[in-house]
Length: 105
Image 1: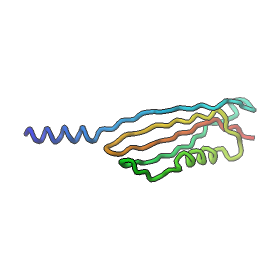
Image 2 (image 1 turned 180 degrees about the vertical axis):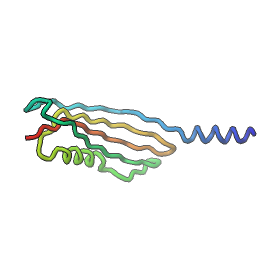
Image 3 (image 1 turned 60 degrees about the vertical axis):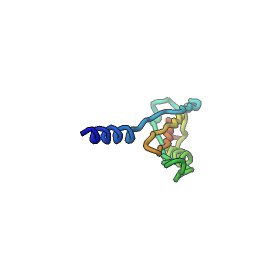
Image 4 (image 1 turned 90 degrees about the horizontal axis):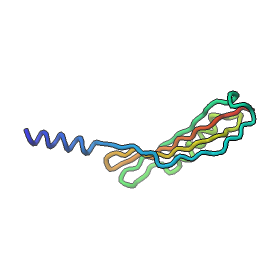
């Protein structure tokens, strides 16, 4: 009985995870038209890391490209970039979320 509780406790302790936001950057906000004329767009990407070994080193560029694709014929202003991490057991996921206001030309 004790061994089952210890095994269950170890399993819960080892499978725990945490999330944290490291940085948030904000660009300038210079609309050429009224704010109501624009719409919010976003681009996001992730990098999975296992014990320091990464599988995607271009995830920030991918998030930026997705943001730009969301507003193909307009200008993006008021961009916020959020860098966060979700921790797991001997692994973590770096996340980039970019959002901005797309003002159509």
